[in-house]
Image (cartoon, rainbow, N blue to C red; front, side, top):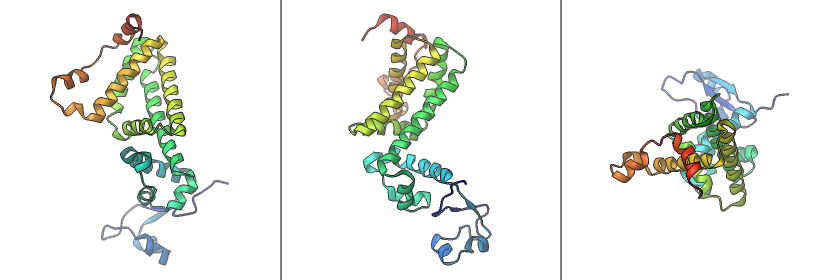
Length: 230
């Protein structure tokens, strides 16, 4: 039997009321037919759909405020459910944070693999680099990665971020078949891109900032793997 949400799981869909607003939650509690009277269709969300919805909302909150600054109350309010139901889905605030970190790294890793396609070597690396550069424009994904590293003094957070980074490394290595030093250089350049994006260097008209934004040649990774041994 399919599991479905049992609390606040009826969400309005379709047209709003004539005055442009949907029925308030308190009105629905007093009048169960409030949605029908307002001409708004109700939809039952499965537990997985509700979990995905909460995760999407939580990513925005944690990306902006981090593990310790984020508020479960704000997450619950934005998702249209109670704090109790958030904890029912994820257990603790930290587990919700870790789920967001997992999701952000998974998006990045999957996107890089898709970008590489069937290419190998420097060609695959170049395709991954272009995709990575485009993806960090998504401030939520970028900041979640940074927030995960900022909270890595916590051993559970550190283990989660470390495992995700390991999967990212292995995905690049398995796709490109390049030497470890080339992968290291590629990911180091990725961290520079993260820094550029986080600090808004694209908007800074300074020579040094312009140099950090200059595009690196894909062959640089292979060259550095031969010539440097940090």
